[in-house]
Length: 262
Image 1: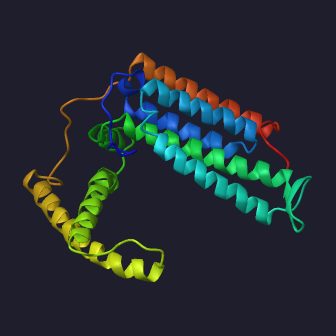
Image 2: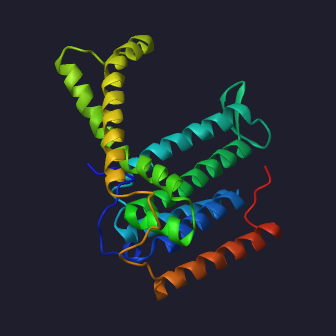
Image 3: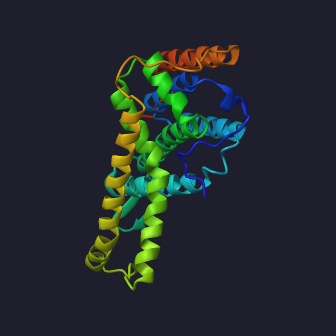
């Protein structure tokens, strides 16, 4: 099963673009999500991100993530209904629990903002090789290699860590360790049998990774790249359109567009 942050090979136009262009696009999506608070504007942004996922051919992989994000968005709307009492009342859940228009709009805006930002970042990870991301962050953006390597290693080992959790749980279940039930205290105690092997396995992997880096001379001198990344016409077009959208969005926000007065 493919995890939502694991690179998926493909020949789509999104795959062929350089990581720098996709980083700028992802950043602009997050800027737009933070600038606007009107649900209609954020809904348009969300569907544009879904369109990019469709073009990249990764929309099916993101379905499970979309379900989780949608559920979390419903929780946000529920919290706003519980704590936001200002505005026009749409209907009453109970006599003392009104559902106001402001609560629904605010919760919907927060949910759409979260989904657009998260999905854009996941599309970037699904369509970009990790080694290309590291090269872009260190060579183009001039970030320290140590911090970039730590961040990318953490992302890279998420699928491995999830598979190991599954294997340890199955192994402990075969040995008679019950991990089911509704009592949280019992489950915490039972999962101690899973946590300890995971910690030991993680330490072994960290030790092997450190040895592999030392044998390859990591940090011993200047880094060179076998293949330099060059911006194509499509990359430059995406960067230009993304920056133009960001400037246009800032001007629109300053003139009062894309906002909802709660």
